[in-house]
Image (tube, rainbow, N blue to C red):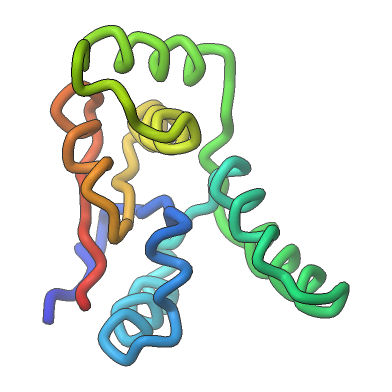
Length: 135
């Protein structure tokens, strides 16, 4: 199993977060968290918040994601996401949140931690490291 690179902050995509109870994924996430490498993006946080089954779960998720470093969605992030869509041409049928998460990570010089092949494709047109969560 790979371990986080000690100097690369990683924006957590929803696809990675949803696997946080799987043993190898949990181990990787725990290591990244101990190294203070986990980063939130408002778009990914909103996606994760949808999974809360009650107010208590929502509040716990909100506290967790708010405590992390942030990769904000700015006007320039939106422009980069749109530019990535244009560059991908016929391959552009990706979820809008993925474009924004990848562009936010790229703008901050962060990687994206995911379990979703979309980020491998986005890394070909945006400058960020695509890090697949161990399964």
